[in-house]
Image (cartoon, rainbow, N blue to C red; front, side, top):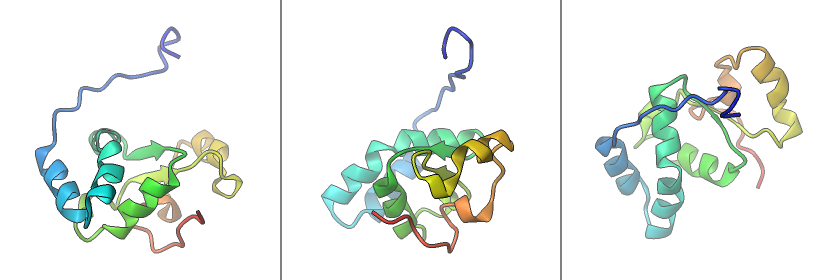
Length: 113
């Protein structure tokens, strides 16, 4: 992927306000660690096209559970390519549109664990 220049490296400066809000949003230390693990991924999404493709549905669920304290993540599209019902290949082929059902802030049911 790198040799074919299909990866774009984006410099993401430390987003301290997001870091602090993640720490405050997490009610316990375990939850803070779960969310903080992917904080840089979320920051990169916020700085680019607001798209995340990840197998980690646990982090997705935790982020959705804390939307009131992390309102700027509502507009991030989160897709799990291993879930057939999310049809990630078709979505990507269509240009990865910001479909309401894929947004973290969507009122749609969360993926089953």
